[in-house]
Image (cartoon, rainbow, N blue to C red):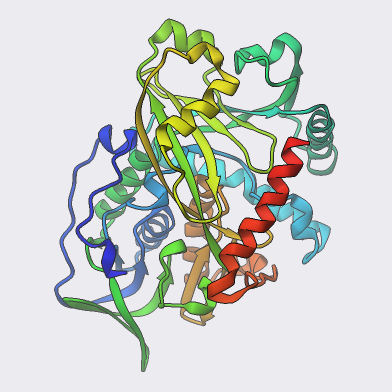
Length: 430
């Protein structure tokens, strides 16, 4: 983990428009805390903030900078629910518990919105999310999901649109229809993460950057967490490292895979052109397994994401390759330049369900958000704080999900995943 020290944020549009330049000290010497949280992405800062609000002394250690990894680079899509289908949960729990999971999937959105309002986080939060159908068979799937949400869970806010209705969300001939969700949306993920970190700091959390954890030792009555220049002694530990676990917890690292995902930001289009391109200003993703996702930015740029890489290698000529994908949906942008191109890794689980649990009674973890991390991390922070405070029922519900290791071991699991994803890419084309 030491390789991440002293690195700036990725050269993204997010970093260029970050509104908080606060730098936190390197951990030096020995400090005591009730809880040590490792990793200052959205999971870590959310957990630290929730714990501090409950009166715990919290130390938050970050190997690089707050929001340096996926939390500060992702597509900014705020998507209610979870990356897996709801019936994935039904394999491990009864219908009443599945309905609790559904309710928590909606709660993830409320957590983000309430945090933004309470702490006055300037992150361009915008409601509205549109899932665009790529093919006729996807139309039926989206309608079926709309109906199931209403009949099974009492959620009747999804709205299916087709024909000219699609043009309200995306001015493209590519999509025959789509499902609109008024409660999901999009935001500036780095500014949201930095805003949560500010709130955590104001609540009393001690944040340390460039302080990679080199060793985690169990001690009588607690744990010692070591960095190059310091130590934290704490009763509880929370691992919020996701793809950057390193050797801290190999048994957890085997449950997730790093998947590269990439984003470009065009030059500003101007208000009129952007309004014509995406009138509702909603975030959009398509319905393929290996999907594209895009949204308008406040300064009238189009942010286009996709080009998912399961090999962990960045595509060649990233900006131009992404621009080529964008023009398949928006050929009218052929004259538009790309100003920023960047990428990073998200962590996925085998079944795409989030992986929450304990390594021991006092070591908690949350990982495997599988592309839904902007909001699901807020739920993780809430549930971990509840559990440490002695109210573990909701946290333990996620512990019922059995997560398998990725096959192939350290040497072969990435090639195996690349082959599997090649099959899904082919299905998307059929």
